[in-house]
Length: 553
Image (tube, rainbow, N blue to C red):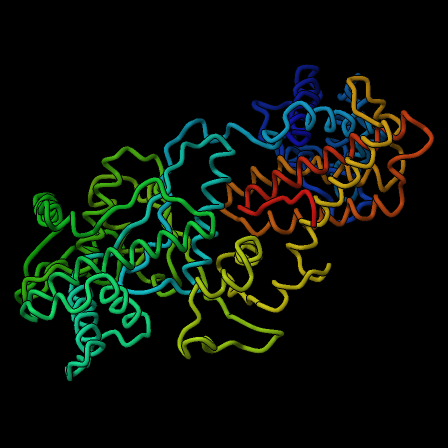
């Protein structure tokens, strides 16, 4: 990565100045590099001189000059190095760096941009975790895209990643669900049975009941109401769970592990976890309930674990679940939760500490809501059912690629406007179409070039690529490793969609200004190589997002 190499060169220059006694330093601090906001200020800039000035008791510009003078032979990597403002050092890279990028892309292929910063650390990403009592909504789709893409990004940066789905299949919600299906089943068979006031009223409940009737007719009307509900509690649950898995598969999301909440209760894990916390002095009894001393870890109040009626809270089960995760040896646990869980973060981190682990072993990503639009107008309900628009319906209308790309276009801590009409457009206004079209256009260029006898070989004369559209495109290709690593470090995925659009734009501009296949065979080969490199990086970026890279459109 250019940034890494440049940081190394700056540190070497500082080290050389230190060795010569020009900078009386005890140690060399880390070097920070950034892209200047304006292109006229170079490719990279560092504030190293300003950071060092106080330590060496010299003016920052004087320190900057000493650093620049200490680059020696390595200065051949730059067209020029300038000192600007109070002491910033601006680097204007020579084309030598850029041509090396094209060689790296060609050699590394789909691995270009990957790093080893994760050093094999075990990371679990738990996401979606929808209740198995109904269809997945649009918010679930966003978390599916975010979680799966984050797992892709972490894997590409050297982490060992497990994707996990936590099935909330325990508690009164499951009983209400079973009763709802049982009543709809009876009603569809002509029985006059009142629907429970607290029941789930969605059309999907009737669909589940219809599926049961289609398979077994009125078979279950001969058993007691209690037995029928018990049967449907399992059967309907499995139907919904299968449906969730099918929906996720349609989004290209496959989990490594599905964890059932009911297992925690069946194996008395919740009870055992509470007793362990009690032994460590973090649990007490009051007002007939069992409480967790969350205030011992900075929370504003303690939290109930077991209600006065003897029923465990969701929080109790979550503590037991996270204990199970921690005991599985993950170095980092990442949970992706909806905005309504924001107040839950502190108590969960408190529980992790009470279990004897550092609070930062658990990381929470909170995501905001999705506003569904059609041509800028809010979409309130499904035309098909008159109810909430489900993720299935959205995927059916816009497809996996558009859904995933649009879900990832904004930071998770920002609300997302998802415009269905835009997602379906086959125009440059549609960002995913724009990026995919760039990949397809390059594929077409490559096919034409090969038909014209232009093919890549080992001795590509990259130095023939001299125009600004060519060099700007290579500069954009050079940014990919930095973008991918930053996405892993910051857990920020929307820059991937931004980068892919910028790369597509850089290619489209290059294509309008530079003829790829011409009379000059060497230049044609060099430009062909640039196209191939761009195609590789576009495919890599889209792959991280879980979006296909079409050869034809």
